Image (cartoon, one colour):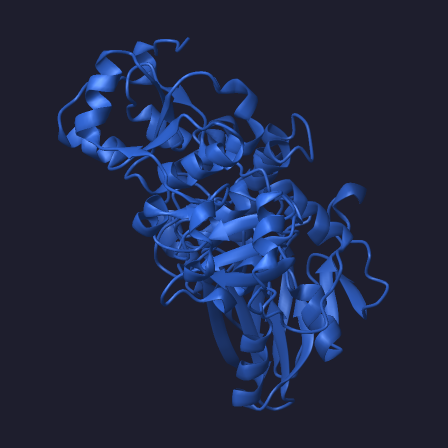
Amino acid sequence: MIFERLYDSDLAQSSFLIGCPDTQKALVVDPRRDLEPYFELAREHGLRITDVAETHIHADFLSGGRELARATGATFWHSAEGDASWQYSGLDALQTKALRDGERIELGRCAIEAVHTPGHTPEHLSFLLYDEERAIAGLTGDFLFVGTLGRPDLIDATGLGENMSEKAAKALYSSVKRAIDRFPHDVPLWPGHGAGSACGKSIGALPNTTLAIELESAAWVPFVQKGDEQGFIQHILAEQPESPTYFRRMKEENRDGFALRDRSARPSRAYPHLIQRALSGDFEVLDLRPRDDFQRAHLKGSLHLPLGSHFATWSGWVLPERKPLLLITGAGTDADRAAETLLRIGQDNVVGFLPFDALPQAELTSQPHVDVSEAHPTWQAEDAIFLDVRGASEWRQGYIPGALHHPLPRLTTELDAIPRKRDLIVYCGSGARAAVATSLLHAHGFTRAKAFDGSMGAWKEADLPVETPQKGARAAE
């Protein structure tokens, strides 16, 4: 068997190519939308991509499964488990087959068996990989991660269900027991996500695990061993991270279909007249340069989304749906990479890019920001409201007394709760998310917002007051 893992560090997402050398058939599981890496791997191993499969309806990225199946003529395999609201649709243009628990995809000597593992989603499948009838590995999708399990709260959190979290957690408990019975305990298990993904809580950094390892060390195990279903449910639902607002759109489009592309999309250099259209609001402007460059000067109304390890996730958090995008690049910044990454979260409409040096000086502005030496006396005098854009788990560990809490993944939907007529000092852990959030606030008319350089890290290093939720927070007027 040929086994290749492709890892997208931006989204902490894994996809897999499995091939049988005898038949030269290859299956791709959970592909992303930039298809060229799969074509290259198939050519390298002398394989034909004959099958494409998905473990479940994804929430954090727009799957490339449909586009890869159409591009190669492969069969698109999808789950037939779950109720009617979790069935795939919009598949008329593809050759498709539905998979149920225990059914197989045959590649020759190699085969993949579906195991229904609901909980993260009702239709979720894991795959056991066989080579000459010997199980040699498992693909667990978003069911089982290194050190933890997939989130059962996302159905409610994305608005695709109501009061479903406990039911989903109960299904997850049953799936764990099923996996203990059906998964070989010593074969490597390859999850669909790694550390940093919002699809799980505190996912480990290793690329794979085994059931034996998880049964020795994972925090959920004692509840299963004691038969404590209710304790398991409470544990797995506690302190889950925020659900980014774009997750709902991803699930709906992955389930129902979307406009498929016929080719890869590489942005071209835009003409200068688009700058005026951008200033008029026709486009969303994404400045890909580092924070220091953006804070010194940027096009008015542009969003600070530096091209780095968090680009895809942060873009999903702050970008409006399907609005045309104009990219601003700097020295060494890669517009191709940005456009490719944006594809993965369904942002296809990149109208082009412009180097920062091409922007007119008269249309530039700077981002106001403060350091701890300015932030502390401002806090003491109560001359500004402090806005915390960190996640809930960070907030629970301590925050600046009196701060408002609006996590960056939900900021676009909570703007009405933020005072417009007060000075705002925006902070996070280090200042990186604060700069993104401040650019978003300025684009929405919160012109009195300033980014806090160093943010909570600098505040704690200076040994300044920190409050915790147990003590209660002062309400900001």
